[in-house]
Figure (tube, rainbow, N blue to C red):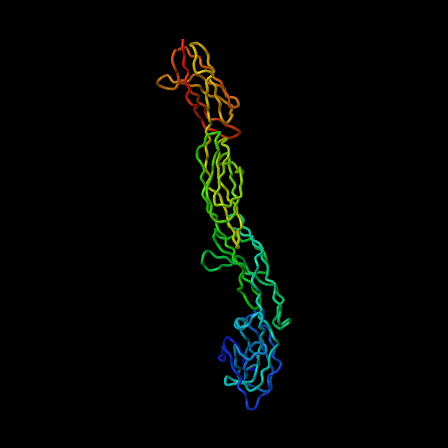
Length: 418
């Protein structure tokens, strides 16, 4: 017992098939060829055997019952009857449907001088590709992902010495663009993960690992950012709709919600919500007061392992101006008579308005008029013969907790006769 031989270091390592050279007088074949994992790192397969006397040996891997010899190691006559074969080289040669065995014979590089003794057959079955079960985007960059191990294939060598019953280990990972993959979480046996990634876009996937192989990947989840535009008017007149519209790109289907708040420090609330599908959207809501608007685009999933993160458009203050409409009980009158001048204000505020008259040079105040539920009546008492222009001024008010901007009515003319 003088030397421990490893496949990665042996000068007698060959890659390729070798044909045994018949010997004129065959030596006895080695016996009791056994295989096991060297240690719990699962990097090497430990091979031992027994033989009569000190003999040089050739150790190799081959398909069960085959003749092709792979990953050959030569052990000198004074060496130990043990070899450690690199797992990664063996796994490259094996497959799910082709079990292997380790062969040991007496011989050198020139040929074999004994029959081949073989180990128990073993497989190099990998853990399969993880199967994505569900994925959903949360907040601005977080993915909730669930997955499962692939159903194991039929074991072609049940109970072989290298079989393990350990659960599959998963390696969550992500990458940005074409950069290298990075761990999204420590490797482990969990089948669910809440992963807060970088700002999208990024990719997410999983690798499986068992004692033989690490590297089979799940499908990639492509996390993208919905792109959108929002056209929010800065000024509207009460009674007309506030129209907010725009476009979006990214997901096939998307929910958009129009949100509003009464001031820059008050909470947002939903005004209307729609499921979108044609890359455009349009909200039309009654203009009832000044408030801020924004459009919230929801997170959603798409076909082909896609996750889309939405977002919010910029907050825009839309000022609502009151609409004031004036009318006269009569457009013609006689001097000294009193003529009602009516005012309708939208929205239906309560407050005051001012009746104004044009004196040829400037607008002057006739008097204040009470406004109740959007209605007011002023009285014009004109004693001068001729035509005089009038209008109403409605100052800013509050309606249902929202401000509405000041407005003028249209001008109207009263003609007086004697």
